[in-house]
Amino acid sequence: MPSPSAIMSMSASLMNDTAKTIYTDVAQLPYLNMALDELQEYFELNNIPSTNEVSDILTVGIGVTVIGFSNTNPQLPQNLIEIQRLWESPTGTNNFIPLTKKEFLPHYLENNPISQFLLWAWIDQEIHLIAANAIIDLKIDYIKSIFMTPLVIGQVNANIPITNCKSFLGFRTAALCSQFIGENKSRADELNGFASAALDRVLGVGTKARQSTRTKRLPFRMGWKQRSF
Image 1 (cartoon, rainbow, N blue to C red):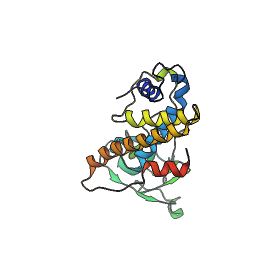
Image 2: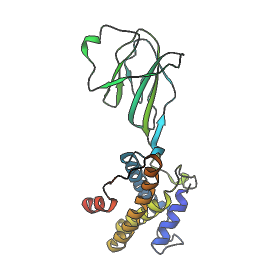
Image 3: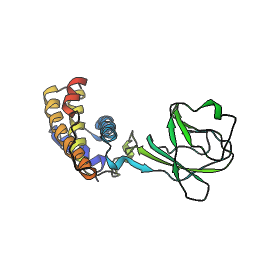
Image 4: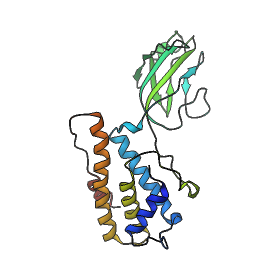
């Protein structure tokens, strides 16, 4: 698992500044954060297994109808990006069954509490439930955020919690720095090509681990051309 400092050393070397005279860690860090955010989004879009997570049990009290990231009890995991499935069980029994997701909850159940939730809705970044007349345990299968960006300069020696990411992050950080610090578009174009190949490899490893058939995704370089980085 590489450290941000190691990635930025690679990036500086790609720009002929191994000593980091111009491309210091401080100068590069905003662009490394951008590259980390991009990689996180690619992982989410391609359902890379390292983004999968199961929450701890959330104990929901009688009458609780909303679970959010703040100001609710319980609260959603702070690294939650997208919910895949929600499970419920009578508290303490560990007998979980899945809930059915709805766009909106049926209003005819609002004043008729039962001992199970059965249904849930995702509204305004919160889980919405029908009020239950019993304490219920919930578990969440979800896509998580791996990189807690933005990283700050005091975190550059701590390892990034994912393998096989150094090549993409090094090339992509160098490309961003070349374009926006060095204003060297031709070098940035070349580095983006290397970043594209590195991204293919890292996504290919994750895809191969979970399925036997190949899938075709939108190439990194195609997206780069359209966005005109």
